[in-house]
Image (cartoon, rainbow over all chains, first blue to last red; front, side, top):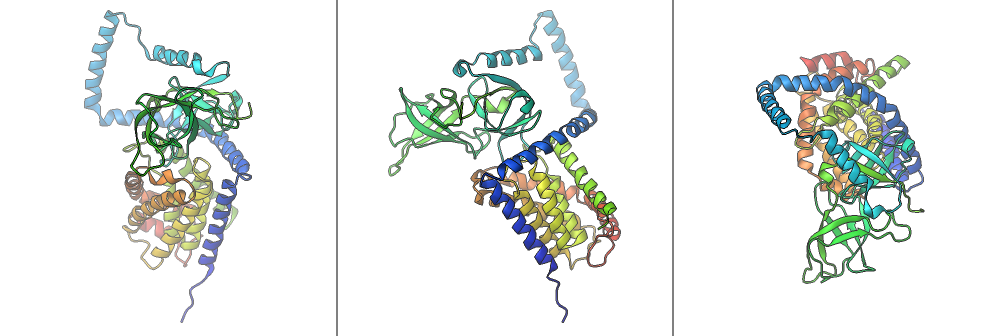
Length: 277
Length: 178
C-alpha cells in the first residue's frame, strides 16, 4: 500500500509555526518596532507605484464609467450646465476650493488645542482593510508626524496615528473596535470613563460609568489627559446619545456619537504631541 | 526552483499587489472592496498542490500584512492554511476542469474571510467579527470566482516547472481557461 508523503504536512506545520511566532512577537511589543519599520519602508517604496498606476487607471475608469452610463451622464451634464448658468447669474462664489479653505480655516482655530502645534492633512483614502476603521493621510514623518500622535477634526478627536511612512500616515479612527480613549465627563474635575469603538459608522460605548449616573443626551465627553494618556486633555470626543442602567448592571450602558464627523472627513490636523510631552 | 522561476513568481505576486492596492482599493461594492490577494494561495494550491499552496499563501499573506493595520502575520497564517487546504481538496480532482477554479475561489475566499475574522477576534481584535462579515464574504468570494480563470493562467505562468504530482502547470492553466 503506497504511503502518502509527509512533506506537505511538515511544510504547513513550519509555516504555521512561523506565522504564529510573527504574530506573537508583533503583539508582545518588541518586534512591533521591526514590523512597523518594515511596513513604513513598504509604504514608502509602494507610494510612487500607487500614484503612477492611479494616474493611468483613473482616466480609463472614468472613461468606462462614462461609456456605461452615457444616458445618465448626458442628462447630468445638461443639469450641470443649467446649474452653472444659474450660479453665474447669481454671481455665487461657492466653490470646492472655498469649502476646502473653510474646513482648513476651522482646523487652524481649534480652541481646545491651546498652543499645541498641528500639521494639516488631507484624507486620501478610507483604509486598506475591511476589518478596521482607518483613514490614510497625505502627511508622514517628513512633516513631523510620528506613531501614536492624536488626530483631530473640526468637531473633535478623530483618532491616532497607527502607521507612518515618509509621506503618508494611517489613522485608526475612534470608532474602530481597537480604539479606547480615556475621557472625563460631568462637572469639574469630572469623572473618568473609557470610550471604546464598536466599528465604523457605529456609536461609541462607555466603560467605567457607574450605574444610575445622571447623563443627559448631548453631554460632552472630553479627553482626560491623565499622566501617560495617549491624548492631550480637553479634546471633545463624543456626546451622549442615550444612557440607561439595567436592573442588575454594575455599570451604566452609554451610547455616544463622535463629535467629529467621521463619515465625511476631508481635512484633519495631526497634533504634534506624544504621551511624554 | 531557478532564479528565473523565482523572478516570475515574484513578478506575479507584485502584479497582484499593485492591482489590489490601486484598482481594487478604489472599487467599493456595498462599502467593501475585493481582495484578489486571497486568490493567490487558492490558484497556487490548485496548480502546485498543498505544499506550494501553503508556501505562496504564507508569502503573499506577509506582503498583504504590510499594507494592513490588523495583526502582522495573520494574513500569512490564514493564507498558508488556505493554500494547503485548497491543494489538498483538489489533489484528487481533474485540475483542468473549467469549473474547479471558480468553485475553489468562491469557497476558498469565503473560508478565508470567515477564518480571518474569527482568528483576528481570538487574537484580541473582537471588532473583526462585528464588521459586515457576510457582505465581505459575498463581495470577496464572488469577485474572486469571476477572476479565478485569469488568475489561474497568470499563476500557471508564474509557477512554470514547479508543479507537483508531475502535471505540467501549462496544462492546468490552459485547461482552466477553456
